[in-house]
Length: 188
Image 1 (cartoon, rainbow, N blue to C red):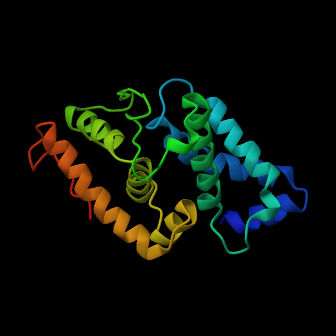
Image 2 (image 1 turned 180 degrees about the vertical axis):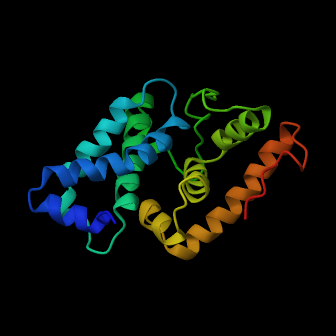
């Protein structure tokens, strides 16, 4: 059995660069997927900035914390920094009210294979950023509500409320686009 994230982090902090590379490889897919549905165009720079920030702050990660939640929290911060710089609207980017579409991104269909997938991606991009993030990370990355609480910086009960609200808003957005009940994914 391979080493855990905690083992790799401890080894990396002790100077084992191979352990650091293994951590990055293990979580690069999650970080890439995080950015892919929130940005148009090249996301490689943001992925690199996320891992650079992770390197610079690796000693600040609390013991017992999920490394995956830690790196995704950094990715979330990099996303907000990207939009704030691009839009010059740092004070107006509220992740509870501002959606990806509000920020001027067009729906990317690169990874949608069917009509239902495309409708889902468009509806997700209409949700406020934190609701979109909560749904994607919970359902696509299998993060727990505790890990989401770390990423979003809110209590676990608030995450549960946001997931409920996000599922409802996603259903409403899909129905507004003409989706039937069968088209709406059964999110629980």
